[in-house]
Image 1: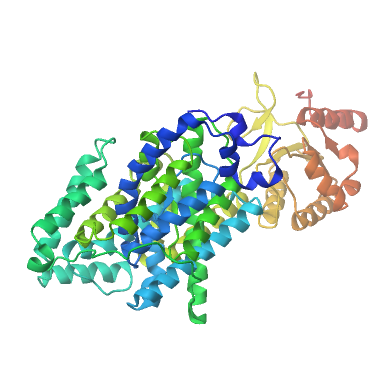
Image 2: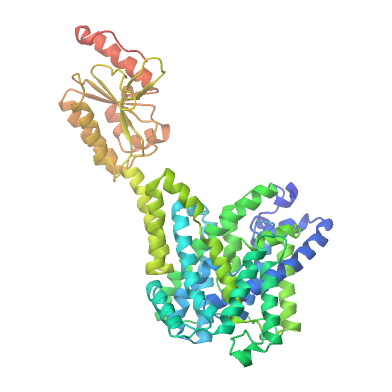
Length: 587
């Protein structure tokens, strides 16, 4: 399906509609899409209901609030979201983050848990909207694939640990994964397992995993309905003590501002920012996938605004933080969705359910909901590509393992911070210790190349061609100086010129510019001239602002390495032809 260009809002759209993609699409909505959107929305509802309830329970709040966090956010995203097919709602990837904040602060108080989760949704929404308006949609690209694998594997592991006790029919009160594992094992050994809960939960999980082989079948719906029917017919709640969902409140939530205490503010803010980071990382990847399929443009900044508006809507209507769904979006696509109206139909169908049949799912077993979350958590694990990383780039594999350990050992929120810190360190390390090379002329190959890679390369007598493969900034400035001086010291002939092949140098800062001035002074004291070749104009502009361009002189900046070599050989021939070192080596 290709969306007409007019639906994307070309130059003729009013400025306001730039921020309202849903209304922009409505102006060019094709009536032929309506039937497809309605059918897809009704099919989607069969996934939205059990998933919303299950992920809310996994987040430490009542299942009804997962439905609240589905209805209004879908309506908000239909207006502000740029993707024509993306489905938003409670998600397994966020459950561990929400639970990490809600569980210790709520202390078993359901109303307090809802307020905390809603406040996190507000924080996440505001962060996403501000970032989108500031055009910071690129920030998730700062997290490399190994780091994303690591924290998602850690989150999946944390979610799995939180749901296993519910599957077995008991609860574990322990902080941290290691204590949770020990508490779970101790409870099992003490015989606390409820046979009915384990049988229903394991059966539900088996059905979901088996039916996943058939993408067109609503595996979650079939498994959950089966568990609900069995629970109701056998009256397992009364006869076997099986925990069930119970009747849902009738009607829709009233808008309300979540009230939390000052002591809760810091963890809620921290958790909300972490949720925003994970939610947008997932949403940006998913939106790119479906934009490529539908041949529509990607607008990451508007995607942030749409995600933020959906989270704000969830926060103001007793919901929880939400994200895009990699399991529900394919359902909408395969059912024939054409536009955001699919999500609107799904939201209205859930609202109709709450008005007309709030008792329909009262016999839904809690262990079945745990099975839904466990199945989703298993889908979050990434092992296959980690094996590829281990084979081709061992250090990035261990980087991913470190991120996983950070989430698994210290918790979801702290683990996300560790992942971000590692990403910053990884970025700085690449620039802090970059590759550098002394270059020479290789027979039969054009240009100049690294003499360590080409041992037969011939160096120009009296000239050091030095290449630096990174921006120059405070963290690597001293290393640059050391490398240049080492190249001068190791030259087989007395050095007259040092030419820095500066094409890879994309930036300089004040620290590195001061270093260049000091290096130039030191080299001049030895009778050596410092020159540059292939330096980019924006870098030259910075050197002009720092006063270095005038200090060095325009003649020391050469457009190519070959011209720099020619200029050096010309100067040597004019001044001291007898010391030219034999036949000149031309580029």
